[in-house]
Length: 447
Ligand SMILES: C[S@@+](CC[C@H](N)C(=O)[O-])C[C@H]1O[C@@H](n2cnc3c(N)ncnc32)[C@H](O)[C@@H]1O
Image 1 (spheres, rainbow, N blue to C red):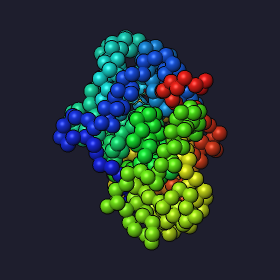
Image 2: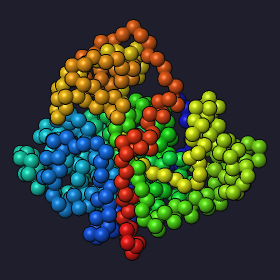
Image 3: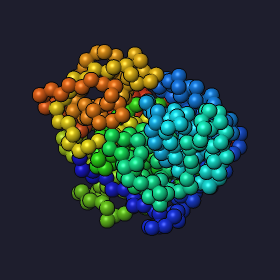
């Protein structure tokens, strides 16, 4: 599906390791997060809407406390069946997830963490030997690379070389999401999996949020509108992302809330790029991030929002999204979401299939949850759509399923129907899960 969204281009200096001011801002933000107060508040982020497997629980108990103390993620990024896999963690921070993954991939697997913040890379490297010994491995299986995830080739990460790429609360901090996701696609083997947690917004975040260092550092300024994320992934060639877990994020910090509300009001004054806007009547409907409106209290606001929806989704989709109109009230809402997506051979399977789970994925003897909507009970035959069949046929889960193709062409769901199932906001509401905003700033309030 072609996206109608224009994103800011990379702000890295081409062909070099030099960062943009936004990268530098994020580096100093995360380098400074050593205080107990900051660490305690960020820990609220790790609340999960999915139970941990016994293997993960055990691995977590073995992590060095200094490493866990500087964990700043917003989920847990450990998919099933990792033994022997080569894994890359984008934005590995102090290395907590890398060390959990190190235990799960075992001695025959390998984990690489990449991070641009020197302090955090140093901190993570300090505990390689500790974890090797703790896990009883003859050799270390984990390394940490100092570099940018938009430029994995500069870090020596080759095409089609990895089984799994993970990331935990990092892409929201990155100015060029497309570059990161495209690099993830490049380095994955065919059949490989991207499995990551991040912060998403319920609508396009205004440009003015991006100018605020705190909103950006907290992931609120750079959070992708979840629908745009799905579009980018499809354009890059990934399978439709599957939503695994989600939680609403409550912004409790009054300073952040005020900033976010203030920035929303300033939306109409934010710097736009008119060249990226389309003139529709007297409104400038701009691609995704560059939106101008006559005034926030304009009586034409409803018409304006309708125009945005029309521009973004087209008339057919808009008709299926009447409820979305209600979301455009000016207050951005946030959710953390864990998605998984696969790099599959193109046009691999076109028909639906009958599949039976054998009960062989470790820690999943009773059943296997591919995502929040697709659970497979052991020895129960179910029909799945063509893309799900391709995932079960061409990935590391292939030996765990019996698969029988049908003659039935895949009932083509419209993209809108698929997308509705993929909203982290809807899933979080269904699960009733929410976490406190993982604020790393100390405002002196009673929070
Ligand atoms: C919120 S922290 C999460 C760290 C880690 N994933 C965890 O769960 O503890 C974000 C991390 O991403 C890193 N980061 C942000 N943008 C990056 C980029 N473009 N390239 C490499 N690392 C980046 C930061 O240095 C920081 O360590």
